[in-house]
Image (cartoon, rainbow, N blue to C red; front, side, top):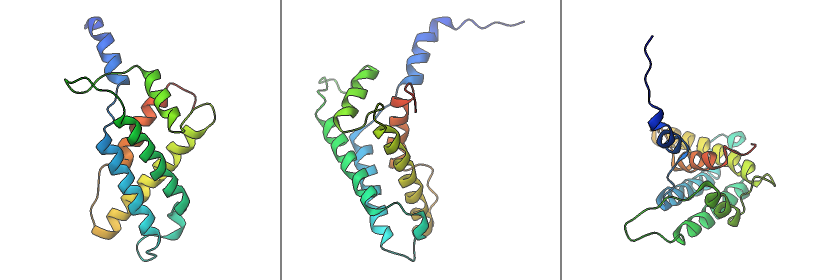
Length: 153
């Protein structure tokens, strides 16, 4: 029997597993990708209509991402660079942009964000033949999923 005692790393490992980074550039990129999806809907030769999200849904995604980006810009950072905030801080920040677990807005947004990401990935594959591993919509979706993972989804 072989035992590895890594208990002294438990706290930092747990913190790393529950941590994420959300940069304003990722949010801005996701916003642009949602806009590209919106413009793709009007090009019937590129994307099958049944796979599209409604234009208004894509505009709603862009609006929420704009609010999120603005809220992130308003976070006071120390002069040394980034900072760490507790999980509830992010939940409160997301509530200010209209995403809450208790009224279902977070779950709904995560669902449409995932759909928009799939739509964007299909668009890239069909229009330029490029296979992307991850879009900015995915990056933001994954970060938000981590924030809300402790809550009932």
